Image (cartoon, rainbow, N blue to C red):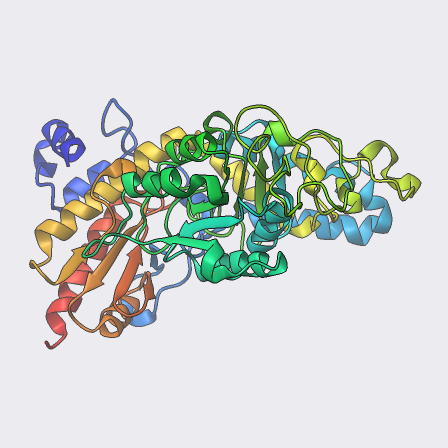
Length: 479
């Protein structure tokens, strides 16, 4: 709100009312102010779905990037290039310029690394999110008799829970005793950092893996990833994150923060398409080419394993890990010699198992081009803080008290684009009313709607119109 008040002071005379269409339009003017909070430089780079004819608008107001991002216009161009190459060259396309398929994932490595704050060698695009979580846990969850627990959120995304429980069962461990789940305090919705750290402090010597979200999918809370990593490493735990709702949404510094690994999808704020290829970060200390194929190392049950007791698992020092292997993790120079001896690529590339799906990588290329055009995550974060702050200010000032409750943290540093709203009135009626008016959000039962103004393509006018239509919709719904 402080930012909005400061902007109000420099707004032109006809746009002084914070809660007016004129003020929203002024915010969207890239030249509106010297500090550059205005402007939506990439809106024209995206394809917007058509709105219902009855809505009176041509395109929808799309506030659902937390679930599936809009299609960048460049996606069709990039995919068609690869389809044409396939048709014209066949198998030779693996080796011919530009973008030989053999190394097409190299073309997105540096840009993706900038988005997540990593060294290029620490980042790889491969598989899908839950598959990558399993691959990472195969390497990093090395339980012993004394250190055999996994620490997650009580309300983690269900797929994460399924993956973690199945990993425990795979190691013949009982989830009833080896799964630690943290819930918010009674009467609260978000987790407190001190409570997370208290669990790590009290049970850390039994925890083999901490696996938390970057941004919580339901509440929109942005966790303190650096502090969690430091707390976990101080107790000898491996620390990994599911960044599905964080990548492309909030600033990340994975290398500097020192977490051991992270996984993400690319179809939400990254806008790479439904079911698109996922991404992984593996810190450089775990990226050595040595690949130890041992039946015992890292999985001993007597508590003496160096990979499981924390002596080589924390942020200090390096480690050699027994990973699941496949031929695309083998070094490129002799990959096609077809020798059965596995010699790993350096860095995160050594954790790959299969050749990348070319058409999906083409989608990632197109998306990352837009991120580069936008000026990177620092500039997008600045715009995001403005849009989400404006959304919060409008909701609290224009919607009658009690009709809507925002339970995403009010501290802007503890959230990304998304605000999660709960409603007193029937949420299906609210959702249907908004949809008929040409607004796309999403609902999580029983009564939560997630609204995410994405800075790449959403505008302050989108936010203003959403709140105006929401207000009218609520008024039209009978109690």
